[in-house]
Amino acid sequence: MQLVQVRDKQFEPYLSEAVILQKVKGLAAQLNKDYEGKKPLLIAILNGSFIFAADLFKHMTIEAEISFIKLASYKGTRSSGHVITAIGLDTEVTNRHVIVIEDIIDTGKTLTAFLPQLYNQQPASLKIAVLLHKPEATVYPIAIDYCCFTIPDKFVVGYGLDYDGFGRNLPAIYQLHEEG
Image 1 (cartoon, rainbow, N blue to C red):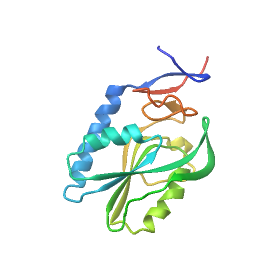
Image 2: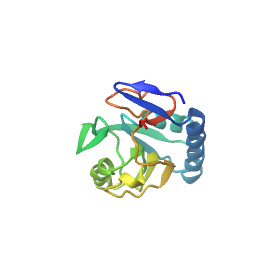
Image 3: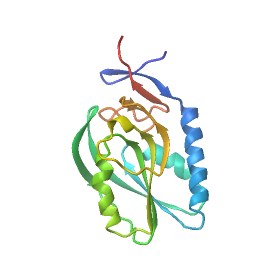
Image 4: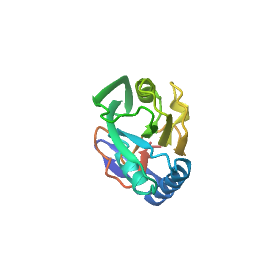
C-alpha cells in the first residue's frame, strides 16, 4: 500500500481517480437528464468542492451556470462547529433551479447554516449534490438529492479535500492511515 504524507499525517488510498471520475460523469449525465431545458444554477461551496464542481460542470452538456460561495467550518481534522461565510453569493437565485455542490457532508453543520439563506431567496427548486457523505458523522440531517459516495466516518484528503489547507491537489481520495 502506497501511503502519502500530508503535513504530519499519513494517508492511505481510498478512492482512485478513475473511480471518482466515473461517478462524477454518471452524476453529470443524471443532471443533464433531470435539468434538461431548465438552465440550472450550480452553487459550488469553496474551497473543498472546486475540483468536484469543475469536473462535474465540464461533463454537463445542458445549458447551466455556475457560481461559488466560500463557507468554512473545519480546523485541522475536526469541524469547528461554527460556519463562516468568507465569500458571499453574488448571483440571483430567485425562480432559478439551484443545485448546491458540496465536497463532503459529515456533521451537516455547513449546509444547515447556509440552506435557509438560499430558501429565503425563493429558488424554483433547490437540490443538493455531494461527492462524499458520512452518515455516521451526521448531526444535522440534510436531504441529499445526489450523492457519489457514502463513506465511513474517517478523515479523507485529496480531490479538493484538505488537511489544514494541504492535500487538495491529490488526484485520488486518501483516508487517514491508522497504525496497527
